Length: 108
Image (cartoon, rainbow, N blue to C red):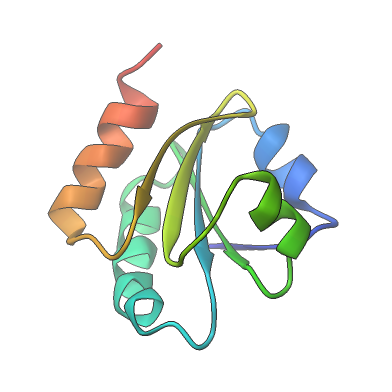
C-alpha cells in the first residue's frame, strides 16, 4: 500500500503503468477505519495488476479539492492517469472487488 502526498501523487498515480485505486481518507473518519483492512486485502489480491494507494485528505488538501472529494472515504479509480470511476462510503470486500474489476481490469 502506497502512502500518497502532494509530492508523489503525480508519479505514483497519474504516471503509473498500472491502474490505481486511491483511498481518500482521514484519521478522524470511522468508516475509513472500517474499509482500510478491506483495501489492504484487495491490494494483496490484485498485486502486480492494480496499484493501491491511500491519501489522507489532511495531508493532500489540494489533491482532494482537485478531484472534488467532499466526504471520506472516497475511492477513486485511475487508469492511464485519468480518474474513471469513484465510490463514496465503506463498501464490503465483495462490492469493492467487483468495482475494481469492472473499472480497472476489464475495461480497455
